[in-house]
Length: 137
Image (tube, rainbow, N blue to C red; front, top):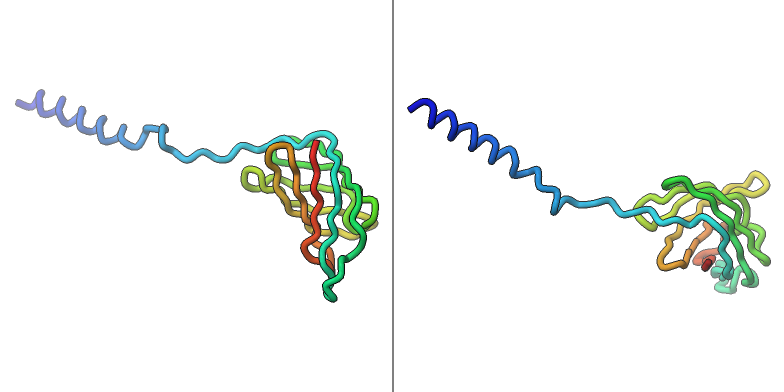
């Protein structure tokens, strides 16, 4: 009687311990997109405190290199020197990008996202909200 009980107990332990091991329904972390290379597009100025555009919009370009989630590169804009400089950042959740843009010792926060060959960035500029840099390959 002991042998069948021991076999049944062992089978029950294996069954219970194996229930949580099925990875078919486990959440997966989002993949990190690659933005390495050259990008072109436009700088779209935000709105100043008096509801006027901060300045003229114009062409923008960027060159990025990437290692895993870490991104670095250079961003240039034709009409707004505060929205350009050296970029260092990382992807924080799938296609969401966050980092710092530095020029002449001044650093500005940058956030953005990428999807289907498009990269949209927002540079945190004082007295100028809702500015955007729209880039494509």
